[in-house]
Image 1 (cartoon, helix red, strand yellow):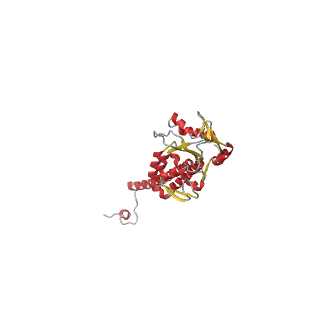
Image 2 (image 1 turned 135 degrees about the vertical axis):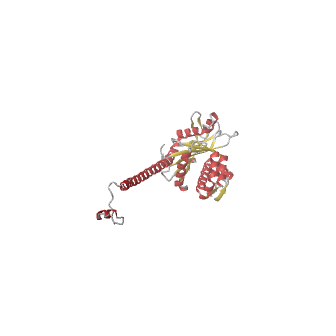
Image 3 (image 1 turned 60 degrees about the vertical axis):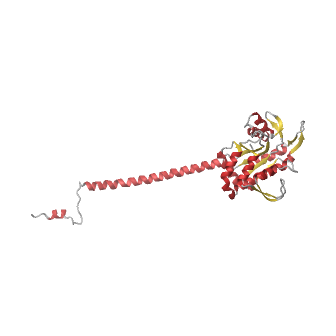
Length: 320
């Protein structure tokens, strides 16, 4: 049987080109497959870019909120109170140490003011008395109210809003210093019973230095308290102390009573680190700003000269 030449060419498998029938299902599937791949790839690239943009936006918001939290409000004032241990172990006692600390993360500066415990001022609900009795009377009336009562006296007499307080018993301070491994003092002159020079003190020695009154008055004692407090801060910032932080933190929170929220501690830490030791403006209400006075009951107190005190307050702390 003889086939036409055209038919032989059509079915020849070795031919360089083979015509494909129009209704070939394989060809149709191949075209559909090629058309479906490209949109899927474009969609994945778009989704990836969208996720990256959202993640970047969230990171920007996070860092912006963190910066706002650390830096604002600008001024934070913390009332520091040192209290003698009462016989029953409570905080019912007079505040032997009164300091007002102000930090501002926006500025490389920290303000620290020591207030004489014998300063004679009006106390709400009590009348005129030593400023350190505000804590005692409030605690005796309602345990736990002493710090707020002292804050109110500061606000009423100094014109400064107090945001938080931290009070510590003196034996608690001693434990914290021991947990740090001691504290080192660099004295340019004899002070607190120690000669000029370098001294490394344990907790008991540091407390004795801060409270020493031998041959000095209360103004020297306030100065010694600031020296030991600043030396403690310097020790905490030293890298060799950092491995002790777990023990220090545990001892600290076991010894202190405060209403300062835990999320405020980073702000204070940031301010102290930025200020450094040279950025701490530490002062006391000096003897030139008060007048010694004896009450009708024979108590030796200090009458404040507000015309001398208030300009210093404005210089250190600004407005309310």
